[in-house]
Amino acid sequence: MAYPRRMSVGDDMVRDVLARNSAHPLRVAIDGVTASGKSTCARWLVNAIAAKGRPAVHVTMDGFHHRRAHRYRQGRASALGYYRDAYDFDALREHVLIPLGPNGSGAIRRRVIDLASDEPVDDPLEAVPADAVVVVDGTFLHRPPLPDYWDYTVFVDTPMDVARARGTARDADALGGEVAAGMAFDQRYHAACRIYLDEVDPRERATRVLPGIDSLLSME
Image (cartoon, rainbow, N blue to C red; front, side, top):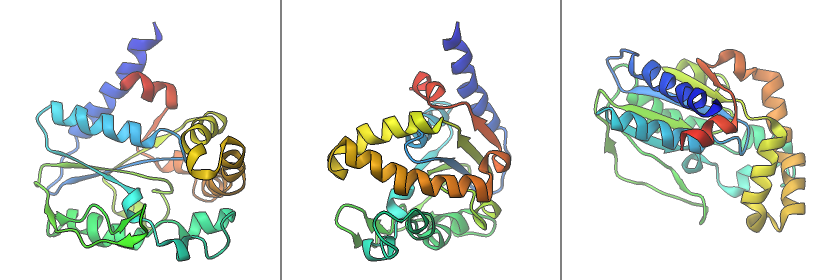
């Protein structure tokens, strides 16, 4: 049956991650188009690693957005604006990736902004064990220079139409209804993802490509 095969995809990924030797915390990226299931994958992977007795930490790019004025400076419907201006990757490097890398402090901040209030935050530093696996989920995580800082990367290869259906249902209330949400995905979010796919080709850059949302749902 398909279910055991899908489970083996996740089990194999866990074995692969745990087999990676590093003198510092292992930095894992979970990448994919908007609403592809990245957070589902990240949560599952963190729980699976912890179940094996290894420290595991989840960081989401929701805590590394730019403020709204910066995110929307090219217009609220701009695909290029979402691709270039939504996320503060410099802050991600400063507060997560570099501290976890060679000769890093091992102390991170999981966010620099409260997304709901659009206010910066200055959370206390959090010490991460040297043998930990730190899983970061977000979109555009293979954009240079980020690949220089990852130790392992995953691309969740959910078909765009499936991700669109998931995203519009999920974000309908926040975006003014399913019709408005669909337009936002078509004009901004997934239009930006298409720029990313063409420009960066994350499927070719990733350590592992997961075969889409069905495999993630079977892992929950």
